[in-house]
Image (cartoon, rainbow, N blue to C red):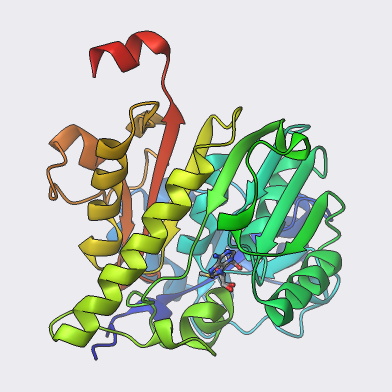
Length: 335
Ligand code: SAM
């Protein structure tokens, strides 16, 4: 088994919970405590972010890609900070914050989170929706779903309906789900992108604790390859099932895996297995983020550019995000 060795402890990411506070208020709070805000325009070159944060003690900055994220140097411990204790900030790895931004449900709309526990991304969607609309959250693990209910309650989320069941058993034609327009899919994966640090373990609990899928793999031996193939089958079935909801129009798919078989290969197969959904354009999938998908598994250069990858050398866990959107009838005819 291979664990990613990387420099992912470079940053401490702080997500502002927009249900409790605003980014400006949180920034001001830290400044009043003596933290120095580094102007992001001065750090346009990403390779300098680490130096810029380290140059001043108690420095922090706004994230270059995600508007509700702040970046602190590694080793910044905010677990006892009042803003953490009152739910204003959530300590979440940057990569794990990408799926909610990619699917970005409109305020007042209905979304689902297929494999939701312990609920970091569910609570992030509620934050971006301003607690307006509905989120159906599914997970088949009762204990983990209980954690989701507590975590999202602590984060002041009021629009989440949690159900303990397999997403694959949810009937897409049930009238309750008639208005579902957005789906966030973050199914079990190999966890091969996880760098061993505490908040990463919390972010992607399933991939590190209590689940044999969490064992990290480089996919080189037969047993590991078989496990990756099984995971990819499951991941593909989750995506295809989400596409059966009659009004779903935007679907994010993510893993904390670095393996192509769980990432580009799954995307390629889904694109081949149906024609109603294509990939969202790069302009709508965190366009400022430089590391994109791999041109593999028959994906064109343009398709690969619509996918997001992160690696420890980016200061995050290894992660993958794709976004499917329902195509217009004219687009389907031309594919
Ligand atoms: N999105 C979560 C978050 O950000 O906090 C992490 C999700 S974790 C990677 C994957 C989850 O999928 C686990 O909680 C696991 O119990 C759940 N799961 C696995 N198979 C499932 C299924 N068939 N239906 C629903 N949930 C499932």
